[in-house]
Length: 188
Ligand code: IMP
Image 1: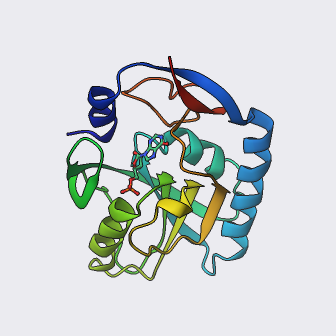
Image 2 (image 1 turned 90 degrees about the vertical axis):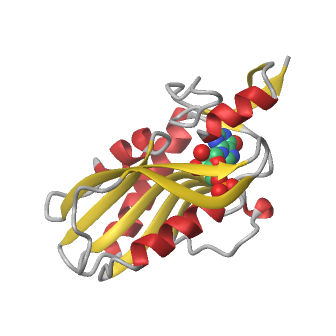
């Protein structure tokens, strides 16, 4: 079952609440993150792998902050996690794999949010078996207090408390990905 779908079935009555991060705050932070990624990329090539659908907007802003001298390529994966309505089991099914061979490449995984860490850690284990030269992760949001497994996050946009958020790629039951800012979800 898709993650967003699980949430919608469990809690149907929500509306957009308080804005946590405005468009301009996000834009400044994304620019800084891109600068860090570029300065710590040793070679001239970088394969940026976005996790669909949530990371699409973040990835597209992030790569446009990378200079032309860096040969940045993009690819995407789509995954679905197994679990019940409120908890991901951490087992991940790959719905769409990357098109590229990542062996020997410098890879940057771009994800919207890390919560328990189960999904990302499972995904990283799969990617490591493919022998990339390096594997780093860049997440827009980190709900650090919810972490159940340790997961390596090199670049993080914002650490947030345990609240459900939508906008800038993040959804609730498929809705509100297109909001330009990041907002909390409120019950009606
Ligand atoms: P984890 O395996 O618990 O770390 O799950 C991370 C995934 O849960 C993310 O990729 C999102 O799809 C989803 N998720 C967790 N928290 C939120 C949220 O606040 N808003 C939208 N999606 C969320």
